Image (cartoon, rainbow, N blue to C red; front, side, top):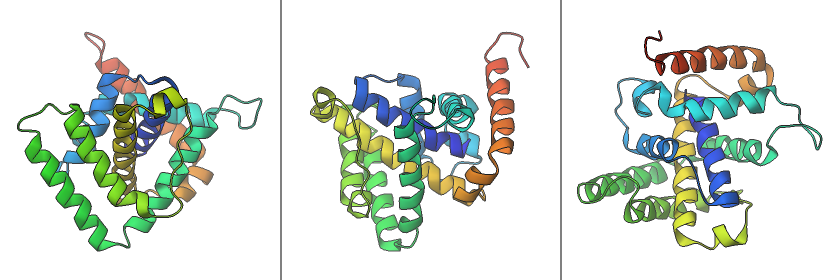
Length: 210
């Protein structure tokens, strides 16, 4: 689920940049994960396993697809995921920056008493956290997309918030014992586990499903 959270944040950021629109429920689950710092389980971070169903679907598509110009793998999403994993490793060596991020999220949590989760004011505040912290690390993530959408301030805030959420999921993935080597050499196991989890999520969504 944590790895699915990374892929979901990366894919949603790419979708905002390319088309300006994303699935609202997936966006909400990814943004909400930023505020779940003391969740009892990984599933609770995303409001339940269904919160990362879209990310698991993207994960399976990326791991099972053929790379290259003639393949079906989304190279942009793969690049964003790799960058998020790389930046998270840099971030964990910066305790002051981690504290700055935590303080910023606490401040945004207080503002949520007056605004809904996806209100532009909340997203703008979370985006500022990303700009003042993660964005100062190198190499910076360069999001590709359509100028029409990338010049829209609300879309920029969504993208930066999603990248921050991707970092949060990358931290969770590492805390659960995940690492980049597993993605390279444990592809079959990840696919099997992802398919099993996604099947369970879809079955639970069907009345009478188990």
